[in-house]
Length: 194
Image (cartoon, rainbow, N blue to C red; front, side, top):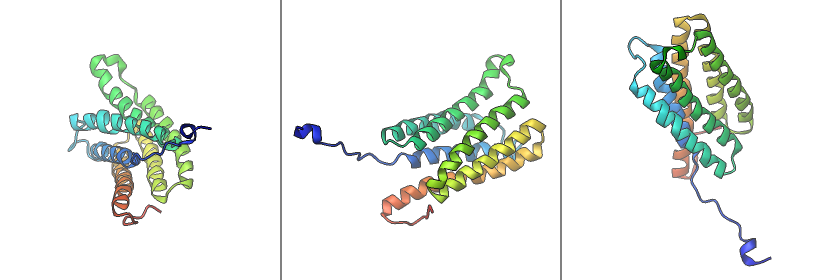
């Protein structure tokens, strides 16, 4: 075997996960501030732009970066949730183009339910990862369950409760991502991940 054939490429790229977690966390916080108090914080261009660009596009890019790092969990999670945000914005905006594209509340509940099921499968994977990711995915499953109930019943109180729970979920994702950055910068555990 020649010297060139025996050389192994070394991955010296940075960890993309904190970017994906921050994108997911901040976008989740913004949307759920709206869910917690839609009267005071109506759905607006800040939430829609975050959904397309940071929650959506940034997470898809992170998913591709995770693929390059041979991380199947990161690839599937970040790419999927990135497309979730983009599809959610599509659900909001397509009826503006044609009112017949409006999603009935019962089917919107189904849409949220399948994302909850998807999140449940990823939650099982977190048992081999960190406690912090278990918290993020556990809270995400609860969030989807509350949103399904809110959309299926039309109960605004449940939607408000989902909003507050979603803010906590987003904060947990933001913490998990930023803890990875802080710990890497300081080269020791400053913010525990478990």
